[in-house]
Length: 82
Image 1 (cartoon, rainbow, N blue to C red):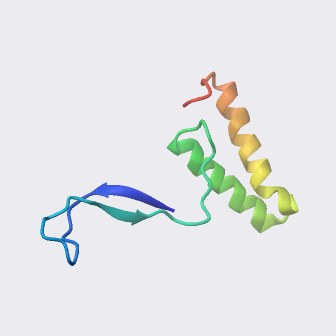
Image 2 (image 1 turned 90 degrees about the vertical axis):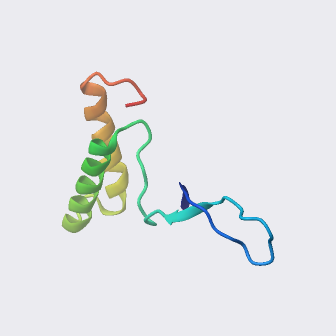
C-alpha cells in the first residue's frame, strides 16, 4: 500500500515540471481497526502480539484483539468514528 505526500519531480521525456506527489510506503501487515483512534490502534497491536506470543487464542489472535479494543471503545461511550 502507498500513501500520498506532497512533492515535485521532473519526469524524463517531459518538457514541463510536473507537480506530483511522492509515495510513502505504509508498513505491510498492519491492519487498521475501523472506527478507532491511534491510541486504540496501538492497543490492538499490543493485545494481538501478546496473544500470538502466548498462543492462547491460536489463529484467532487478531479477532480477539479487535473485539477487545472495540468493546472498550464502545464502553467509553465513543461513537463509531473515534
